[in-house]
Image 1 (cartoon, rainbow, N blue to C red):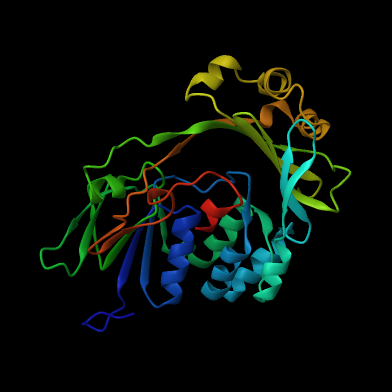
Image 2: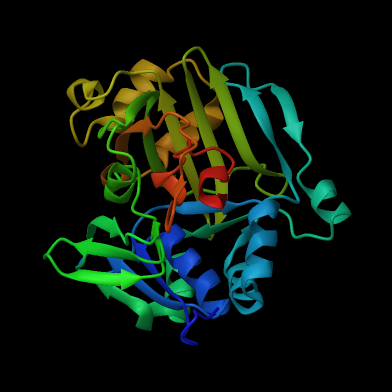
Length: 319
């Protein structure tokens, strides 16, 4: 993509997470000059495994066949097994999802799971030279004639670009600058989440990949992530800030077993019992109203900056 002067159009990206890196790869492969600004001072292995469903995999194939191939090689396939919803107490199946047949009908790969740091590294290998770390985009100024936009960094420096992509997360500075009328703080989704990885191999591992155990105002999700590991999430209808008071750091597993899932399926207890105490992460889940003003002139929003989603079926990550 070239401008009137014959030079490549420049795309500036605020945020170098999974969404920002993927967007940079798209634009780079389309001929743009790309500049990613990431506020973190280094890339660390961060975050648990992420599910990539067939719709997102197909997008990756269209974006970059080499990256797509690396992701497939590094992933664990779950879509070729039974996946579905269970009663949390009786352990009976409510419903199962056929993830394989629709993908095969469309000539696509079925759902996979990949460790987020591995996915991050695969994308970084393609665009790392275009990433500046320790630099945060805090605002922007559109040019009067609408032809370009100037991004403003936290150190006061200014960068001119043909377009700015705000991929800077749920507390996006780009989003706030795009529409100052929007609330700065995201809204509580109604749930808090405990997440961890259990070191175990359930007896049904060859037949079942993804399970959602349902209960009253709570649910528990487990997914095979390969190498003898099961990722699990416990979603509880507890107001923000209260979980840490109810179960201080180091007591989460016992508290979940005793007070939240005491009568639940032995499959749930097996996962909790096989989890290292220091590996549990707890976070309150927040959301944004579905505002549709994600684009204005030369600026657009991407990922959680535009549409944060609950971590179900990998669709937040997929989008």
